[in-house]
Length: 285
Image (cartoon, rainbow, N blue to C red; front, side):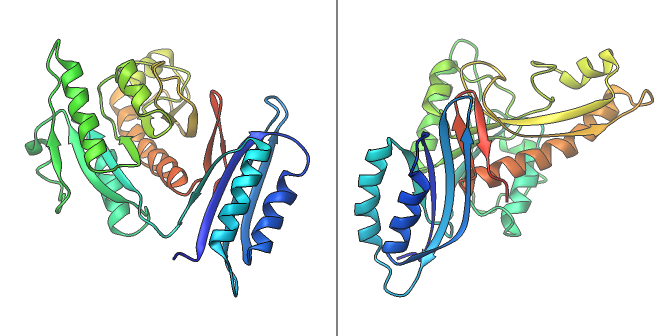
């Protein structure tokens, strides 16, 4: 049995939540090594992330029995995970492969602790001939006009068959249907090559250049049925000047996209991102 655990909690705010959770952890023989919390006055909800490990004589079953009672008492939405486990992830990509290549690299050097269960693309394997996928299964699922539902069903079958806990759209340039977005609610991260909510849709860097902006950025967010309006996890920007062409913006944007997506994926996998309506609460490392 694992000796470390990560608990995340979201619930209506009221007195006694921290005392109840921390007291239960102590009574079951565990030690808290990391704890963060946030009380959102606007929504009257409370958010908490607690890391704890086993002390001498720790009783995990006693903790779970007690926590079930506490969770019901405070009407908690919660998760409990093993931080040493490798979550299974499906990555989806299209023609642009810089985010896919970056994720592969970070996984292989141990920076991103996850198992890539599948790579899905609407382009054939030859598109990525320069990338080493190793033994990761690759699925070419092209999008055919008037048959997109069939393609999305095939994607969903991959997610289910591989038991993927997370789907990452690494510059996957297809809009998910409302039905697919609902299936993946809360576990599908997209990287948008724009500092949302500005410059949505196609060619945002060209839109930004036409407006003469002085900073460009990228946004990682959860996918929802509302295009490019899902809860934002992470963003970053870079300054540009009047000398930069649209192509310069695209080139600089690739670097921003890579690091923003990697941070968002890492924080999700570590239980650092909690949904708060149309927003998120992020407890960064």
